[in-house]
Amino acid sequence: MSVFTAILLIFVISQLYWAWRGYSLAARRIQSRAWRMAVCTALLALYLLAYKFNLGSWRERETPVHLTLGEAVFAAPFLWWAASSLVAFLVVVLLSIPRAIAAALDRILTIRRAGAETPSPARRQFLGRTAALAAGAPFVAGAYGLLYGRLNLETTAPVIRLPRLPRPFEGFRICQLSDIHIGPFMPAEEIRKYVAIANAQKADLVVLTGDFVTFDPSTQHAVVDALRGLHAPFGVYGCLGNHDSWAGVEDSISELFRQSGVRILRGEKVAIATAGESLNLIGVDFQSPRRFGPSQPVRRLLGNIESAIDRDQVNILLSHNPDTFDRAAELGIDLSLAGHTHGGQAALEFISPEIAPSRLVTPYVAGWFSKGGGQLYVNRGIGTIFIPIRIGAPPEITVYNLSHG
Ligand SMILES: [Fe+2]
Image (cartoon, rainbow, N blue to C red):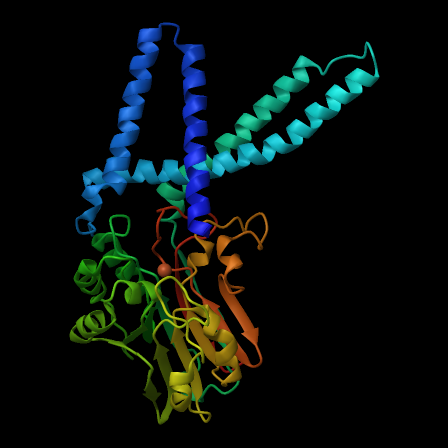
């Protein structure tokens, strides 16, 4: 059974569980059977309509690049419900295990101590309320992530110390945007706001690290159009992400960017030069050592850019996938700039830095890393995929300050 099938199966079970809980609640609160059936039928119809909108034939149309009324009314609540109800169901299951053990122990002890007190009703009530609060928390967190968390942009400004940095580049600033994922929940108007924020940083160079679209190739024109306002004295450069590959737009979006004054580096290098010195900026398409969705594994990571690395210069690599970092450090690349993980998107790093789904597939989830003389920064991106929710992983624009050390 694949992971996807397992998640789908758990999701179906979770929906049956919540239907049962909903009906139980209605049975307690609505005395009239006719009214109860009417309310339940109306809710079920609404639920099925949301499914029809989100998963049915309506979804075969082009992905909207603006937030439409339909997306706001049907898609957003549905996606919030799908994510929150699944997590809440898992919480209920996890909580029920110790409760079941405690109840079994209670029964055993009661049998052994004939005439002993049965567990107090107050304790039962306390446990029941605690469980209800815990099961409700994912719904509250999901609403927070949808309405606030995914919009709460953080502009970070790490200082990157590069011992080999030429003097003219002291204080050189690079602004990075990543994982745009244009769609109804990252509409073109919102991307233009991020463009304005990025321009306001007045960086020397702007870099884009891929995932401009999600799955729909028809959205490529809109995302390029929204990003064409980016400008910087040393230019705007980028690389492509796995979603650009999956949508089959690698060639076409690169050409659209070229026409808009943005150069996508596809296994290429460019010299960023000033005052007789230069940095060697390199970009690669998405590369992964293992099969990642429809993307084929790349046996020799970064093999296509080995000859582009200049050991006499500071080399900066734009690679969507942070997993290329280990190889980049071996090859002597001074600084890798990546995206891809969305910082976990739904990460509970405020509880523990280890709790993020992305950590299951990469050790490089977000922020700064160093290894063997190389450095990596993983930008959390500004967009989302699948569920438009961010928890503990706010969207990010990064402005790097390069320093000699
Ligand atoms: Fe992405």
